[in-house]
Image 1 (cartoon, rainbow, N blue to C red):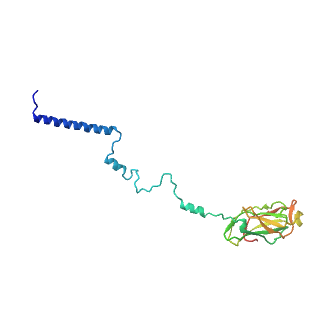
Image 2: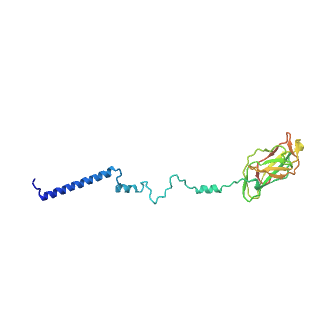
Image 3: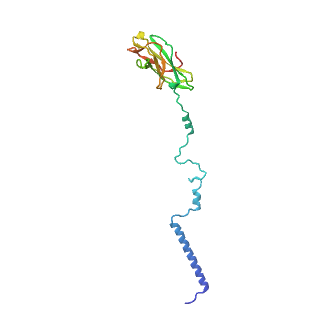
Length: 221
């Protein structure tokens, strides 16, 4: 076999090395592609963090998903709400002088605000005559038809309702003499006790009805 010249041998070896390097490079690229985890390009990384891309940055202050905004104004209003109704413990009851007329006996029943706050009354008070043992005499008074208005009572101010019944001497109704008139402020359960000093009241018979009007401002007619 003839000997190959030295320059040609070096050229062939160099060509073989280049070919082998290209083959290894190709294999390395194919391995990276088939692994399913290619590295993102610089352009893709830039787009992912660009403004408007939806990716939060450290300066973002958006609320967490599902967070409920704080309604400070509503909370303040809720905490400021109070019950403006006058309670039994804040009132004093009294019965004014009789106002006779046309066979009727009419009495102003007065409720006075004895508390240090402003409160309101609205509608008809409850009323009942009782004897010294606390037993009720006669039925509950009827509520006279009315269009009630809310009455605001500052400390010391009063509202009144009219308590009326036919004079027993004229009506012939069965009578009794109460010891106390129980007066219950509107929407309250506990009554106020007022000593009754106006004599007999009708408690039975066809003409025994007693009526009470809605409260209005003042102490009576």
